[in-house]
Image (cartoon, rainbow, N blue to C red; front, side, top):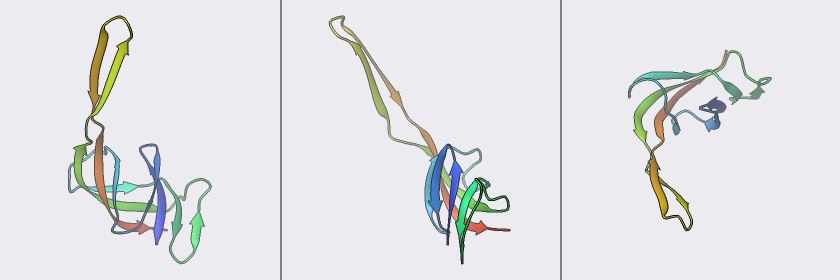
Length: 103
């Protein structure tokens, strides 16, 4: 059994028991989260929406909120002695998929 869902502008194929890393979600670690933007579900048969399934949702639990490793960004102009370094750490949430519910 699996579902294809959308969150944070990306699509994920998930099954119960999977741990996925998504864009930061509101809520603390241990809180329940529902994903309502479900494109397709496969249980006994394959069901797709046009484009979304109205009565399907994926239920999960936030395991932790964290940030990725730092990405260094270097900006410079040749021959002008101009250099600027900045960094970026993208926040994310790890979610444990508990159940896939279809109406």
